[in-house]
Image (cartoon, rainbow, N blue to C red; front, top):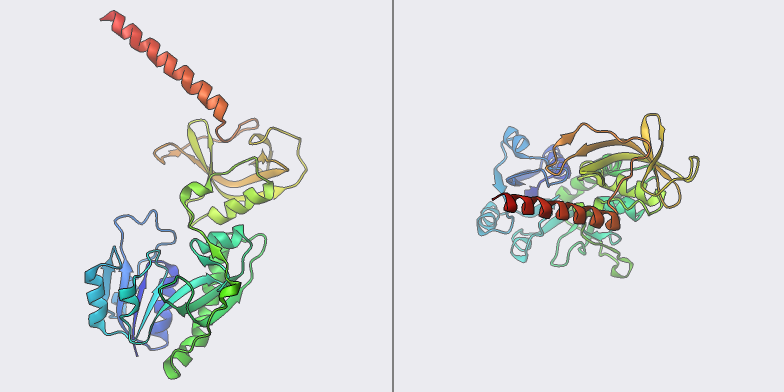
Length: 331
């Protein structure tokens, strides 16, 4: 059986490693190689592994380009795995393999179809699973070949869920791949009536609204932490990136929403709508994302406040006008 794989993240490499371990004939590996990997959450190159195992490796930027399609066509793959790629493969690529394109999704399909599933599993308290399924023209709707669930706890974040997902993938592939090589592809249709959907998320969605509940803010931080860009707020002219937190319903003096009211083990504790969020791990950067050696203190107020910012900016504009007038008069 001739197998190919398209990917760009850790789950892609893990799938490739398991295909080699189970002695599949991997005839092509297509790895995403963008100009910058900073905006690719969990990016992982497969080039080194492919070269070490004497596998044909093809870098790409746009998966649906004609050159890539020709490479896949020439490889004459029976099954093409598409794992960990944010770009949707078009119908031409779906039809190239003799048997099927196989996709991967980290939710218990048909629940949790769509984009940014790792973050949504935390925000929505969803059901996690390593799911390999048949790719068709409608995203995440194809027959399921194997599904290995994993539990999600209240204290999980994207990092810990990533570890659980990797372990579930190993179990799923070790259970499924031996039968795939001997029996072939046999899938179970999804129940469309039970489907739920997750929408796309962007880095801006990590902005913290301190008027939300402490639990919701803590959940946002857990959903946005590494390898994602991080939840964030603002302090003065700097951006505050929050990577780890705890939340409390009570226990500190009542304060102003968004203001640091106390410290716990050197960690600032911020007032929310109904409680407090402890910033266990955070750092500050300037508008160019350069590190700033500044720390929060009791009384620091996070976030921008519309009326105050409008007042401040109007004053600055007036000062600039006065300076320009003085310069004009001096001439």
